[in-house]
Image: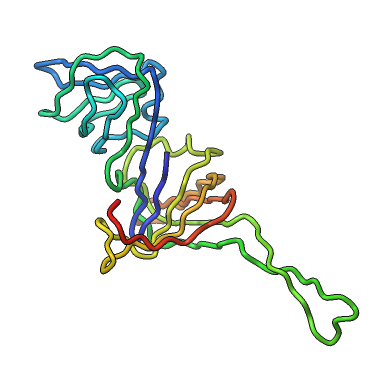
Length: 219
């Protein structure tokens, strides 16, 4: 599961592979995707998300979710599935840029690159320094736009993208520019000001490098 931070918002993109997923054609009721492990919401599926199915025998397609519980995702009217039992290794992937889960007001991003003083006595009167690498950190402030199970994110590792410039269809003339790295959510502080929207932040500590990408091809 990936949480993508962008200018003005955070987008959740998921990729969930399981052999416990089945499909149900329920005419006249809406068709459903079932997970006997009950992990759909934990893996990030949410109402309104466009979902691409792959690895199935009969249902490789893109559908849109209407409602989601832990075990069952119900499709919007008009999206059709074929009955198929669990057993195949099926992958559910959110299409395009995913579903917006959070509106950002601002973000503080530290790439974790610093310097260490390596000056020795014989270097006087000059100093010497070496580049040092520590955990990168990110602290976006905003407000939640969905009922995502955000508190289940605590301690989990995700891939984060923080956009300097976002494009829905990147090209050489309209690039997307972003920092990307793996990190864990270690804090979800809440601010409740008088007469204003309740705000919540994500405190993220990185694992490994935070790299800068300039993307000029389609997602």
